[in-house]
Length: 69
Image (cartoon, helix red, strand yellow):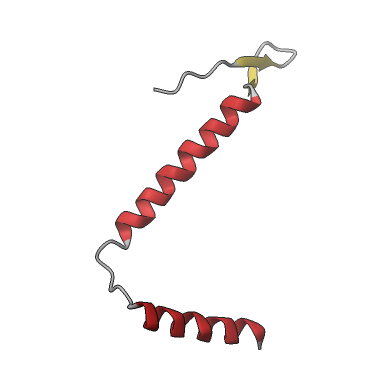
């Protein structure tokens, strides 16, 4: 489990309103979340049809033409 050092910020009524964390821990959290999302996307398309290299290049050429026009 990722250990997170945090400081709670309170308003004038002593109600917690925010949390501060060191930037290094925030960046690590971002990386963990991005990796999780990427792995989920990879799982979602695992059974999709795979293109050959030639078909993929042709597909990307068409995409590029669509963007440029």
